[in-house]
Length: 215
Image 1 (cartoon, rainbow, N blue to C red):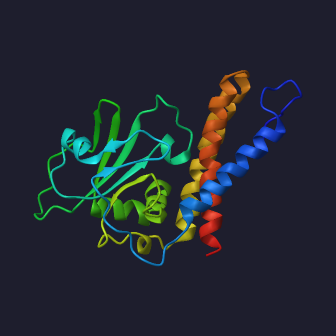
Image 2: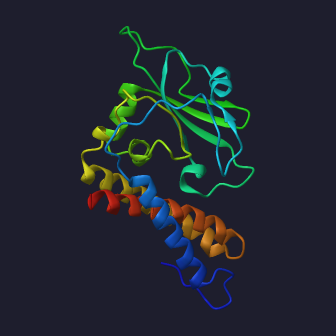
Image 3: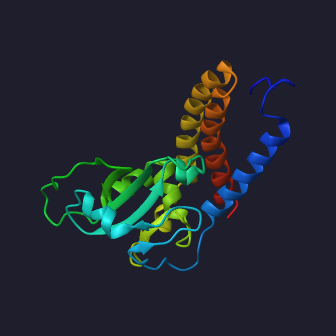
């Protein structure tokens, strides 16, 4: 894809090691369980991240109804985050009981937390449309650090049924990521690290799709 010269700061060995690392992480993401996840405690302790108090975070957000699931997405899902990265949250709430749509902001920002709030129906529609982020959330094991809350009765993996839809979505996203990464790569120097981080999304998605296709 890119012409890597001898003077480049990123060697082929480093690139290969990083690709292998994300291949392994992709396998973890796409591993499917035979039993349903259990509801996690409101306060989750992470081994590689700062401790997060889930109840405290949810109180700062405008949540109109019960939260079914809470996922950590963005750079922390892909493994491209730094110590200063914000926490990108995907909050899935129960569908409203009435026909009138609930009044709340779909995108919310509070301090270091960027939250996207979806109803159960909206989340399901995203998965059925092949949206990779929501689909990967369905496949995450409950022990994964990116799963902050997950109800036992909230069945997810069964929603992921059309691999070709996911493939089409991922291919479209990959093309956009490649074009964006090329711009950073052409600038050289430290900017190539940003281009590499963008490509990691494509590597992780491709590995996850191949893993799911072999199950």
